[in-house]
Amino acid sequence: MKFKSVVSVLIMMMVLMSCGPGQKKSAGGDKGSENIKFMTETQNNGNAVPGAVLSVAMVKDSPLVGIFNQAMYKDAYDGDIIDWFLGSYILDIDENFEVTDTGIATLSVDPENKKATIKIKDGMKWSDGQPIVADDIIYTYEVIGNKEYTGVRYSDESAKIVGMEDYKAGKASTISGIKKVDDKTVEISFKEMGQGIYTGGNGMERYAMPKHYLKDVPIKDLEKSEKIRSKVVVAGPYTISSIVPGESIELKGNPYYFKGKPKTDKVTIQIVNSQTITAAMKSGKYDIVLDIPTELYKTYKDLDNIDTLGRQELYYSYLGFKMGKYDKTKGENVVNPNAKVADLKLRQALAYGLDIKQMVKAFYDGLREKATSSVPPVFEKYYPKDLAGFPYDPEKAKKLLDEAGYKDVNGDGYREDKNGKPFEIKIAAMSGGDIAEPLVQFYIQQWKEIGIKGVLATGRLIEFNSFYDKVEADDPEIDVYFAAWGVGTNLGPYETAGRKSMFNYSRFASDENDKLMAEVTSPKTLTDPNYKPEAYKKWQEYYINQAVEVPLTYRYQLYPVNKRVKNFDVAYGYEKRGKGMHLVELTAAEPIKSTK
Image (cartoon, rainbow, N blue to C red; front, side, top):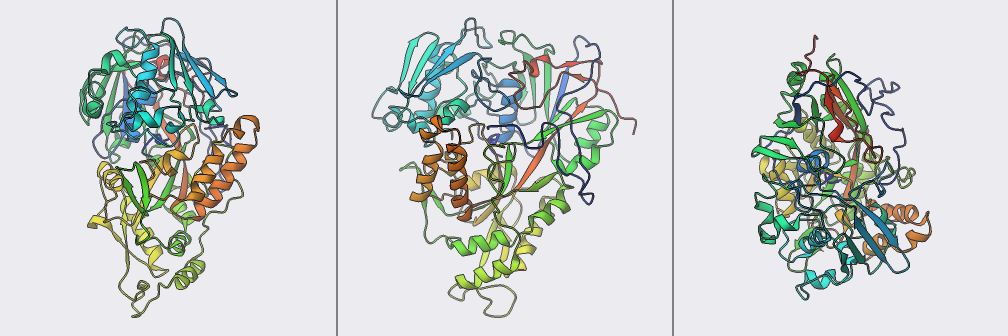
């Protein structure tokens, strides 16, 4: 996902996964009854070797964008580097994705007066040794709300902060609802407050930005500034010592990290092609591999120098339909009633026409499962178990197309449009990996079977960064697109489906959608623990039926780890358990090679 998901950032939540940490329901291709279990933490108890360098591979078939700031990044890979190494999070979360008191700051909530107070603990410092102060928290909101802000974190949720909309419109020089109580305390007032306040939502952010370091950079220029690309000041366990843009990063331990200076002082991160990563792991070149495609699991699962850690990912892939454009002047998504995919029955037919269960079995060796909701099953409390989504039903798809007026007039096997003219759907899909091309051809063939001609927008698969540039820019060559989201821990709908959200790539908006999303985040969620789950389910039933963003798959997130690595933990909520990247150690001078 793009923000993690993503999602990173997605992407990028509420409760433990339904199968439990480190378990997979069914992941064996044809052996559907075979269960694969993954550990979530390394089991190495050896003695650490001083001075060893942690070597990390990030599997990506295109250059790294390289924006290392929570308010500014858009790419999920940047988000992963932030999450594991460079993050300036001031509020920790637990295994239920709820804010705890174990971070740099604490959160207290006053529901009656719709206020939240963030208090920084004593002795907290940035990686340059400067103290983390209230002005850093306030500056974060001033950046996101500024009319010259080029990032994508401003959303309908942001507008819940008192005074934020006036500030965004340039009518006020400050945000009236954000008050500096003292150098370590910030009070935020909200127009309305829902349960999301406890998960870093409701317009509140879990991170801060070093105002003393960034304040001289015009906000419109932050995205291209070296101060968030190469010479960063952070609050996380590591900071950047050197970088080859797009290719590699060298990190050094942050001596001021509030949980203690990292036990492994030096880390290298290398961007590695998906075609070469398995051979590199076999030769012992890398200690930890991030963002490895799940379809590669079968190529390295038998290596005797590797342990594979795993967790259910906060992620879903989806089929998106271009319904309109983002109006930058209005700051909102505007539906085009004449869009090629404006007809609901056409969109639903295309969704019913895809056999996702067959696709999962054929292309992912069982390490994915069909999705029916944009809520991954890891959210046990919110996952709508009885939501059917769009099960494969080609006959129903054909009937819907007939009803909508798409019929094969000339007998060539493809349906013409409602006016009897040639009709085709232009598809945007990403390049990368062995299955990218055959996968999109699978979709094209499936749609051919219901009489719809699908062709690749631009005539070919699109490189990752260019793909999202085109989708975000509402390229007129794109009718549908295949993408993914990393689901945010707030589990709020506005980030990817809100009327004002730039991440709402389908550009769908409706009064009913606004109403149902508002219920998901309403004040009633603070007093009734069952209100948000029920509201979320009602919104999902409506939104998914609109078939503007059709969930396709959930996936397992895998972390191949060299057997010399000690204290690496991937289970959600590791912060509360006192775990983290700063504790990772190495028990051999060099990564271990495979004998197979």
